[in-house]
Image (cartoon, rainbow, N blue to C red; front, side):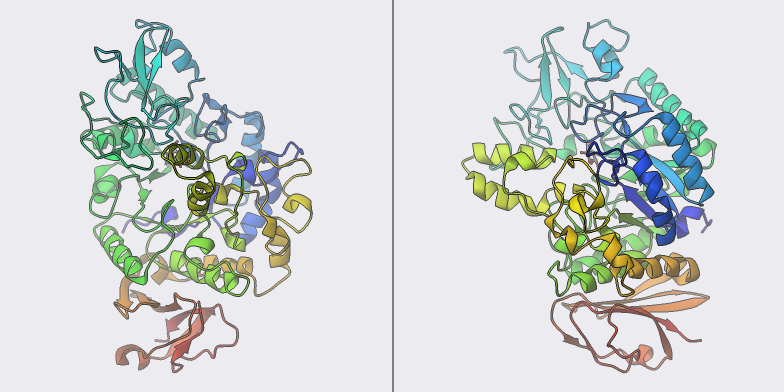
Length: 561
Ligand code: GLC
């Protein structure tokens, strides 16, 4: 393996809007982030991924970009960003930007021009189609956010044609078939690299290309969510032939020209089709994060799923690719609430256990803000309190299908992306110390119990544990480059594996359940001399001779050679 800095790095995702508000307008901002950089340095992360901070009408919290070369005034200015970049770099922290170029905002200058006339120079920056003979939409594709009548096409009076939007009506898709658009995107990315950023996260890059000719999908409608015969079918616009050429072109024109890391949001990428995107010889991306394990809507992961997916992705790495490890981000609910247990009794233990799984399996770990203090899901009772486009859109569709509003909220709340977007809980004061004003989204009521200040005051906290976990990555070569071998295959609650390279062998044993479990180690392991290097349970004796684990207990051992 040709070692790169990001192989041994830990990336921290910042959702700026909810991180720290410095000026009391209820919205997180860059000065707020600057004030917290020392905390990130202390945590030990090496790189920040900023979700979009560009000028945006905020229909999808910045994933609707109105100007790719500026900072949204609510977050600060370009000068603030330069200052932040310098500060981060001086602390040894790199910064990567979220690049949202599957679509832009309809308020982007390009789209304002594009919709003016059929012969406008920007017309082909977007995807326009004439209506069918009866005036209806060009096909039956539905849009993810299920706005309006559910179609992915929106009629535009000015020119009498429809434009295509996979997401919001206010987020028209860009036309990647059009060379001047591609050149424009490359210029913009190079501009950010000139400014000093260290790389990019590519939003829904697998969806840049659409099925040629825009044929109807034959997929059956989802009775609860699809409306008016418009069907959400990701296969019509995901991993379409020619996508690799596009990503390779971005590599040739931008990524490959200088030191820069790239991580793609791999919608529709799984271990079976990932390698071409991430093998260095292909010159496309450095890594993608996939949805084989965690995603919005997956509320439980079984040990079998965990083992199967990890084994397969380890093969992708063995074949020369790379991967991302994460269990939650700004698009999912909180990991401790979904895959651990957020009760007072087990929140701490299970959050630490999940941390170990993410940080000791092959690939680069991504930490989502608040995960390091075990932030939990929230439940709002009224749909008006939700902001996530999926939650609001799905709610409308479900209610239109006859589901009661109460039931719709009960079903959607556990998977809403708003769970991850509540303000960061800095301390136990009003608004969790996030803002002196009115937060743009309601604070999680558990902030008095769960906050960074109280974690800091406690050696046994999740934050202190994450510090140790992140530090281990720097001192343990086996975590970065070791082989992965599972023990206890088929076991319904134990997740256990070794990571082994020439210099070192590590053993992880985790009780992925809320019940105690007895176990017996295979002879070849039990016969070795092991030193426990990290554990989430004080009381347990640091010896492998022990034959039981308490609920959510996890331990890491190193083989003494
Ligand atoms: C990606 C982003 C998500 C956004 C969507 C549309 O999935 O992570 O937050 O809503 O793309 O841009």
